[in-house]
Image 1 (cartoon, rainbow, N blue to C red):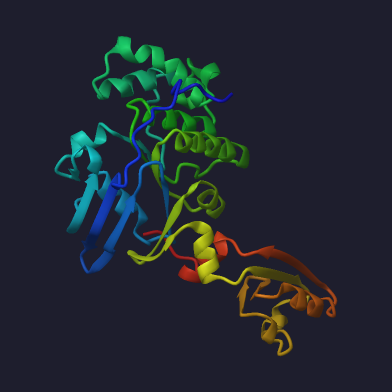
Image 2 (tube, rainbow, N blue to C red):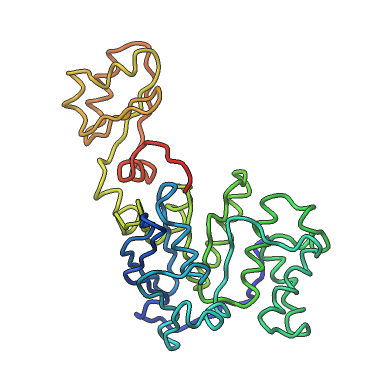
Length: 326
């Protein structure tokens, strides 16, 4: 089921020039600044993940990168090696080399899978005779060969996502912008989508990915950009960020009497930080062994010892309070 598209990877020269740059981007709505002096870049062959809570500015940033929302200040530059293109000034030239998968499906319900790819390719000026041989390759890449004649309404959520990804590849883009591409998918569908994206990275594509799934970010992303209140609050490789901001071990404690442990005088020296979420107490520690030994002296508790992960990083940097959309 390893798709054949493209039949052989398109090898591009390695360059130190960023493929995509955002510099000092700002966007305000009335008295609210939703993107505030944001700068980042993507190298050729890199996946940059953008994470943050609701209202952090992720969607507005993506919309500005796509030319759908005009920035108040800042520059958005694409494809520096080929002669820098500016968004929104050079929007048409940029989009000819860009692949986009939006959070919500925009497939045409009146066309079957093969026709969706064909019609989309025609928007880029491809002749029918040129694109027709590639349609089976794109469908195979998306594991949808057996659904070539099915319309989107007959597809599962995962199939629709993979068809959207295949459609984004019809113009052989240098850069893919993926806005929460696995939202709403079951675990099996998510894993298949991840496998497809990893293949694209291995073939030299660059990806800008927004996601709420921390396991997705850790699995796919070369680097992460953490946003909150429109500002960049952290940037770096996933494991480097975890090592920089977190203790290496986490012990989760739940069960009868667990919440009382948050204020236990004998446990406080054994943890660098103690946090409570719902019925669970989180101990962040440099020495889990001593903490676990102390916890075994208490009955009625359940413990889970694990290494610190991106979800811990996300919660430390942005807080545990649930935020409304917007």
